Length: 141
Image 1 (cartoon, helix red, strand yellow):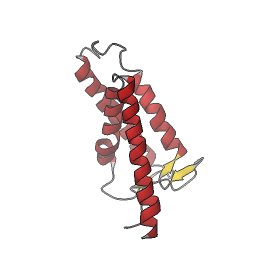
Image 2 (cartoon, rainbow, N blue to C red):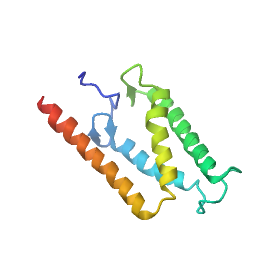
Image 3 (cartoon, one colour):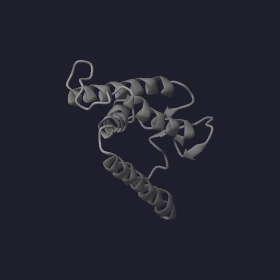
């Protein structure tokens, strides 16, 4: 264990939740999921940009993931945001952070509310388990 996060916030944040996770980043993800849903039609059978909905959703997810990754490239050029490891870069952020996030957002939009709640609850449970492991148990070791 190195003691370093994959990314970090070296300077001012309104509220530091965890190492590398400020309130601004958390709010961005909460708003981005809602914002991407506004790009989707209400009817799951309606075409998106001339493509059948299932392919249009892929385009919306990939397009938003690419945009978020490009924005992050500019953020890392400022002193407010740092990628600590050389392998953690725009491509890895695109693949491992933004693609799963935006795919979950565009596909969950059409799920029934029970399945949506189960998905969000399972994400919350994974977060709690990982917090216990990484903040509680590994801290003792």
